[in-house]
Image: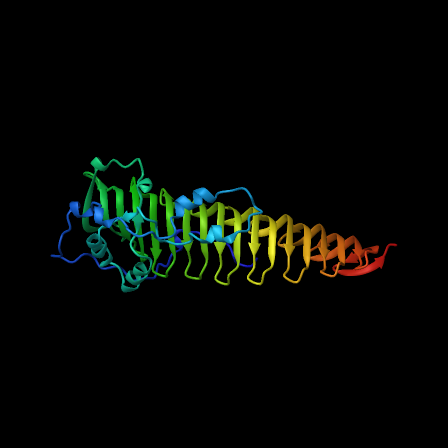
Length: 345
């Protein structure tokens, strides 16, 4: 399976060599709290395909036989459907982005401003207890924050826009000074996570896009892919199935760009347990796996009708097995590391 696995969104692993961001210049126009409020004209009037949450909720299924990739791919997008509103007014956004690097502004423009729907707003936030500040407060750790605070405190609470000292942007909700609820993280090297957060970590449903072309759409826990998910790689290969702590674990289905398909069990990112693999030319293997290779008992079949059923070790026939010829005749034998040592009948 190579290195095709889901990546974490840990901020400490993001680039830390980027230049420090400029602070707000003295005398620049102050944008009032009223400007932050949503306006009716900000509601999208055209339908944009790809509301991550509504579609994911409808497609959840335990039917691992479903290989209709269109169901999973049709909404792999950071755009949101009709009914979403801008998280911040354009003036607020422009003011905040002016503090970031040119490269980061270009990447942000590529993905567009963050949007939200009513169900994205955390119920724990009391709008009467928060206030907006746009002075670009710089925390001791170097992060610059524009947005809502708990009244009378420096605790971030509500909607906020942050430019971190490492050079990435977070647009989303905060509770108790931590990212909580819906939000989007964009790094200066072009990686994006959009979805649910819990106490500064990606948790719940989310969409991730890496600058290497990897796309992951699914469930997260503690900054890692965890639960049901769908991955697509830059070479066109695809996976859908279960993840645990950032690795493929449990039932899954993988399709390579050359048409080869595997359906079965995974453990720690590798094929392990019962599984079937099929090649485009008609070859197939059904049986046990360990460490990404045939291990245990299994049957390997050729398109002309020949097959071997028996024991395997590290991807090769090893031990007792039965060879079936194309005409249906059978012979039992003993194999060692893929080489037949003798016939037993």
